[in-house]
Length: 111
Image 1 (spheres, helix red, strand yellow):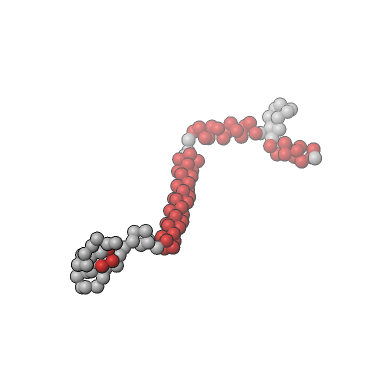
Image 2 (tube, rainbow, N blue to C red):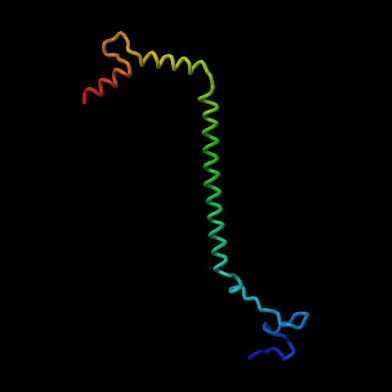
């Protein structure tokens, strides 16, 4: 039994200034689940796609920085190192030392 008098409005009887009854808002039913799920899935795909693209850009930039700072830098150490390596890879006076080409030829003939 309701304790409200007939002149007191109840939840369903609330009227607007135009005289039409206002729609009662139910907080448990005012969210459209299908639209919410679609928006969340699209937002998730967008976020992960953005992170993937940004990680690709980051790796490309970091690789270009390595190339710019290390491989293109003309330093005397690189020249000395390459000269030393070329000397080590050439056939020497020792009978056991051989060039890379000779070693590769020997590997091919052993099989």
